[in-house]
Amino acid sequence: MKPQEILSRIAGAASTRSTRDLEIYLHIPFCSSKCLFCDWVVEVPTKELLSGPAKRAKYVNRLCEQISFYGPHLTQLGYRPKYIYWGGGTPTRLDPGETARIVETLHESFDLSGVSQHTLESTPNDMTPEKAENLKRCGVDRVSVGVQSFNAFQLRTSGRSHSAEDATRSIGILRAAGINNINIDLISGFPGEKREWFADTLQKTIDLNPTHITVYSYRATPLTRMAMQIEQGVKEPLTVEEMVSAYEYAQNMLQKADYNEYLYNCFARKPEDQFDAGLYGYGLQGETIGFGSGASSIIGHHYLLNEKENFNSYMEQPCNFDIVIPYDYSAVRVLADVAGNALMTREGLYFDRFKNITGCDFERVMEISGVRGWLRYLANCGAVFRWEKDRVLMDERLIHRVYITHLYYSNNPHIRQEQATAAPAASATMAGVAGN
Image (tube, rainbow, N blue to C red; front, side, top):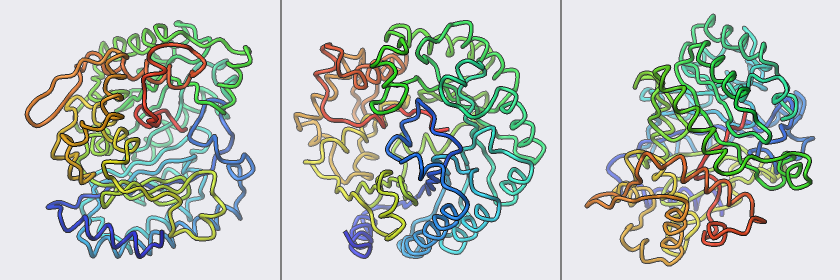
């Protein structure tokens, strides 16, 4: 679909909305290594992922071209960004000048005066004092550091290119630069994980006193190296009950350290330290425009995606999208994704927000057999729903168990279980996993 037609459709949907809040997502598809567990870059050829300065510079040119094209049009339609989020890949693979140029392009293309949280993902081995100071100058006020584990064996066998010492050092660098709102990403339930390893990782994380901690449950996504190692018998996966137990261990340990779980995976000590962009997206509070190869958007009652494996096509035509799906009553998979994400929140799925985002009445969506099947599948995974006049929500005590069970069976199709056969074709985006 041509960019002008996409803009026309967005304009048509925008005319029906009273608020036009926006999240800007920036995708940087480069890393210093290809981790064995990471499914965010599984489709990206290793050669492209590890690209050198020349390829990265060309990518920044294309990214700025895309921002410069869409930003003024969206601004004219009344969209005002509330959040900026950089993901990947590893955004800090860019040099400071490239990061500053992207931020400058954002300022030229959007009214950023209403941005209340500006988050960037990083890895410990890519953080330097120069980069941290540049992030502070660029307005980044929150950094998410992909530590995943403080256990040397787990780091080595999962393909991480940093050490535990690197992780500690990177936190110090960020604080020295004046960035104090820091999230540490961890993964629970790695294959062969020993409880004492995970307990030590949690304690080291707590001792660093970050404002926010995210704990993702490992998922054996097909085509990742670690999943193939499991298939080949090289690694032994935890059972679903062991994975639930590992996550609940984190819940209990973090709660004792005054970290409160306010959203599945997410723990913060204070409300002001919460991941607002996550609540915004999962809670269907507004729309998202994604820039870059591998970025997705939910805007103008459409789901837009530039597929990660189509890096070269993005470099040729950065203003096009590989996939453009209107939210209508035939789009079962993307409607299930929207519903599933909202049910990860403690507020649940508000019907008016669902209609604002998709243009579809949830009452009619519930008449679709595939969506009813998806909710039955979640019930098979342990969900207990409460239906109210304006929303449906899941028993918050069960959210983690439901989604860990979903991850386990949806990524282990060879396991013959009722749960594995009951689900419609819904994507794994319903329970995130760390990319860094």
